[in-house]
Length: 452
Ligand code: GLC
Image (cartoon, rainbow, N blue to C red):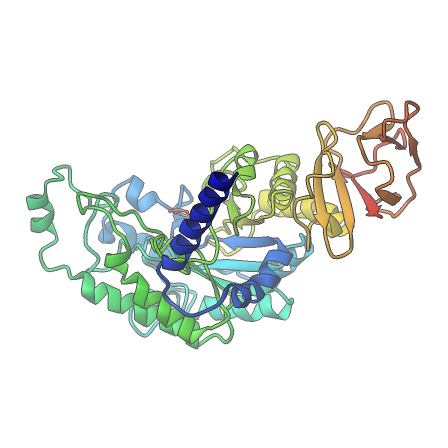
């Protein structure tokens, strides 16, 4: 017994010192961080928007890499760029209707093109036929709809002359020896590129008012030095700058600052399956997902997720305590195409009636058994438990195993119509809830249980 206690003491001391010893960049306390992250963790659902010159190529936002296109070869997309149907008010209204509470727009993607008016480059929207700062219009429109506003900014830059060629640059050589890299990178200077990034991020975080989220993308450190990571970006200094300019901002985890306790605000499982989301429970996380596979507009991609799959992503995220940011890739003309609009419309139908089972919700306490084949979300403030009916019971009976004495009322969430229930005949502590034969007009209807 004494031995056990000693071991326990030693173990807790070790964990404590490990936590304590973990490096920090700033001085924020855990409680302050929780407060800063509160709105984001309650809102749960956001819109990602990938829009750039690649939208014109319409065959993946990595087209420059995939087809090894040079700056000269890519110039035609700049010359052609003419978003004559760009109407960010419409985007913002669609996002809001779908129940999304925040948005993140690519101000610059890996191709290097800037949708905003930057002093530090000519490679920007105001110099195209658009003739204006498109980021400003996005910010104004989304704010006007009451949505929180975020910026995505690519750390990679396949256009900038000082950005060194690495293993995933479009001009990455066949001969990957150090000597060859040194040769082709002669004259390129990452220190200058670092400064360029700092300048642009400063512009983005100074000229557009309060910015709620910064989504920096991404790091790929490699032992052989032909990748990029925190030293290349100057990540520590960059994060300090970001926090100084926008103290309330929420920053993702792609700066390669894993060794710091406060090197990121949330983790970003990208395009993972719903089955994988359970393992992020307990962390602060947001899964980013596409409608069809690529992030940028891809005309010929026919792998669009169904309404049910999209709902499943949203519900499963919340039922594991995380967020979903769902991406739209507008066309080069600046519109959501009909496939995207249709997907958003279906989500808005569901969210209109069922969003109370999403906002401010998380996973249910273990004391509530998940009915076979269904999922649970839970609002701990209002003490409501939501049964997401993935499989609508054919016999009209939903068995709530072990729920006896734990609930005081049951209703459908969509119309607040009462659902009657009674203890199971065998007195096992189970409840049997009676559902109408006809499933309500929602792909996944929701039962709301008011807890004792
Ligand atoms: C990836 C891709 C990119 C996309 C991003 C979104 O890192 O490079 O195209 O913008 O993920 O999560």
